[in-house]
Image (cartoon, rainbow, N blue to C red; front, side, top):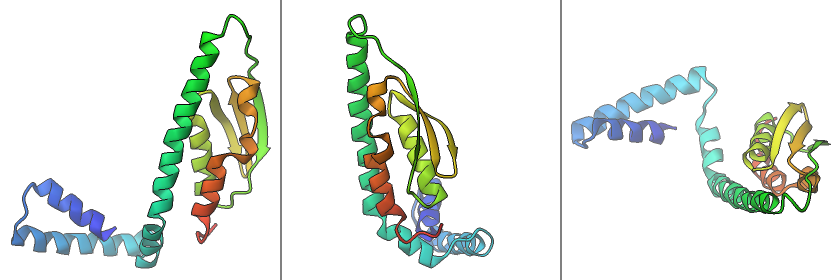
Length: 157
């Protein structure tokens, strides 16, 4: 977080001199100490999250791939709309994710993929609206959930 504060300082100043760097370090340190004291940040948490960056980037890549695949599927539905009627469905399932953050990310990931919308999330139970019943297959064991399980290892619930 300290590095992010410092980078923002340098970017907003639009220049890099010794004075700007020193003053930026002091301001960034003060902001970081404030965040640690009053907002629950810590160096330990920052290091832990930094170690998870490859998994986070992998998750973002997975979202992009799944959104693309879902777009192709939805386009196919519209091109064959006259031949096959769609059957919208609402599906309910439970997840084994433990943290609130992971559950929220799963709900948002499902909503981001075309053809599915998270209608509600209560504790570990999801209610998902699907454009067609074929899109509901495998919702309770998605690639999103598998990646999020790896990401939440070590996080406090």
